[in-house]
Image (tube, rainbow, N blue to C red; front, top):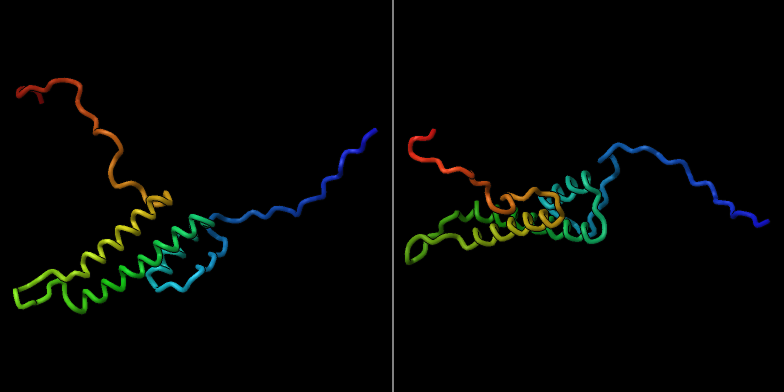
Length: 132
């Protein structure tokens, strides 16, 4: 007769409320805006590995966008030059940082797509001028 190997008893499982686990610390120091994004998403999703790295990149871009917004508010959206008013070039950089955050959150499947995939549905019947 062969003996079956004895499986060691595993520790008891503990039920945890969703989102109640401690939020992991980011690997680098983040500003207020980036830290809010990190904490909010980690609290809900608890990302690790590649997901956490993407979230870290998004949080850094969120900090950058916030910093640019502060500078834009201080300098103004339009700058007076010798040739007349000119759009502040920081506006474009802020928009790029915000777009990066949005794209990254889409890659993480956290943000919902903003437009439907495919063609919009069309009516299958002809509707003439008299039909209502």
